[in-house]
Amino acid sequence: MTTVEADPAVPIIRVSRDFRATPTQLLRAHTDPELFARWIGPDSLRTRIDEWDARSGGSYRYVSVRDGEEFAFHGCFHEIRPDRIVQTFTYEGSPDDVLLETLRFEDLGDGRTRLHTQSLVESFEARDAWLKSGMETGLEDGYAKLERMLTDGTV
Image (cartoon, rainbow, N blue to C red):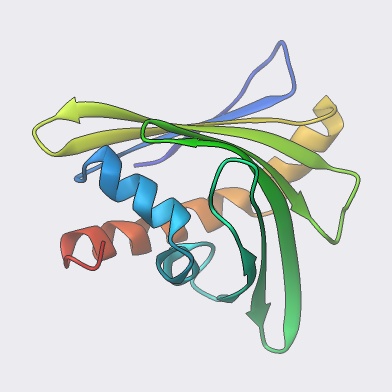
């Protein structure tokens, strides 16, 4: 189960979910473009990678498509380490709303990892707009696809 929390004091969204996977597997799922495109976002979307340079200082751009309608996202990988990723995330339909995201892979032992994501946005209004955008559905669908890929050995 994915938990999504809005911090009442600062414009941050915190997400966590446990996976039956190692931190290495989750890092790979987030940095390998072919894997990432297979699990990211709602079931109703298909994703293509336009640019992907998953290294500290690299950047990315991907486009999710539904019935001919495209939703593009881009950002920069500020830091990639075995235990975390720090990156920016921008939906090109709202280019002024840039998120600073930190993903942390907490090794729980016994082949389990807790993924913690913290997304800092510019304002409470922007944070609330993200929460109302269907973000939770996209997270749930995407993480369910990722869980299946981990279970069947794809990752």
